[in-house]
Amino acid sequence: MRVLVTGGAGYVGSVAVEELVRAGEEVLVFDNLSFGHREAVHPVAEFVYGELADAQAIDGVVANYKPDVIMHFAARSLVGESVSKPFLYLRDNVNCGSNLFESAVAHGVDRIILSSTANLFGEPDRIPISEDEPIRPGSPYGESKYTLERSLQWLERMFGVRYACLRYFNASGASPERGEDHDPETHLIPLVLQVALGRRDHITIFGDDYATVDGTCVRDYIHVTDLARAHIAAMRALDHGSRTYNLGNGRGFSVREVIETAREVTGHPIPAIVGPRRAGDPAVLVASSDKIHREQGWQPEFADLRDIIETAWHWHSTHPHGYRE
Ligand code: UDP
Image (cartoon, rainbow, N blue to C red; front, side, top):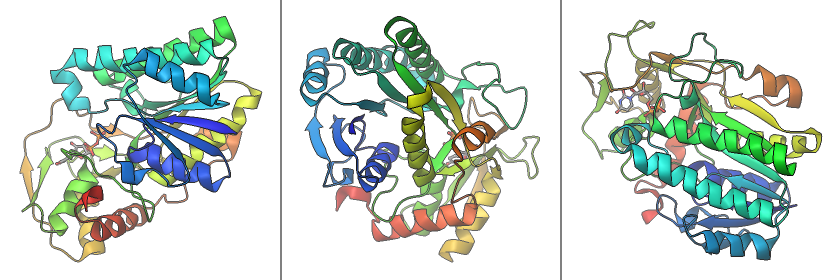
């Protein structure tokens, strides 16, 4: 199959491309390299530099490449930034996605896979969070993804497009060649590993007075390769209709557990300081991935926090300055 991957130079997108290539699919990556890295794109994949905000640019690529499937990863994805700059998210993520979807429809592409987010569940009633949990986006970022999910439902009704919405919990870990390289970095595991690499003095724990096992927030860390494989499972399943899945490993780990495991893996003391809570952080976010397990037989291969941190540590210690060297 021919797969057009937007954001295929980014963290999750680049590992999805790696898995698509491994599965024998033909891949074209469309990316503006604003957050991604050219070096992250698998050498076998075709690369086109371009802006999704430029409707003509993406329309030309869809028209020429004639993909069978589109995987849409490209987006702004910082929850905190979206709270301080809501229109950047409500406008740009929705506008870019709409340009892409409009081109898909115009050129008869009827299969779309969307990167969505656990941030759809800002205040979950039940943990673990299943697909029928009420949607209450926790931020403008979550709202922008929800708008795109809803758009796909309309595309199905009006044009027969089949879609998969994949709601990621905390993407983490690395493949041997591809890892997490954001600037600025805001995510817990890479920040903790930067301390172990001597690039930071300490990690700040954002609050230790939550109603959790040790007072720190609990999150569901899912390995990026497991996420990538879920995209391939979802792509194959589109033959039988549209679907929406929550993707996590079903187990929660606290911030302190992450830091302690990173100490064991790296052998570095990783000093930690407790700071104030970060605005908008719910105490616990853990996914139920029962649905994709039941329907597609998917389950995480790297369900252990130690395995996840070991793969991330391998990548960060072999790429101490990310893709920049
Ligand atoms: N966190 C922290 N210190 C940091 C970065 C993150 O304590 O320097 C916490 C954050 O409050 C959250 C968890 O680590 O509870 C995971 O945060 P991350 O930003 O990695 O992902 P999120 O859950 O926000 O998507």
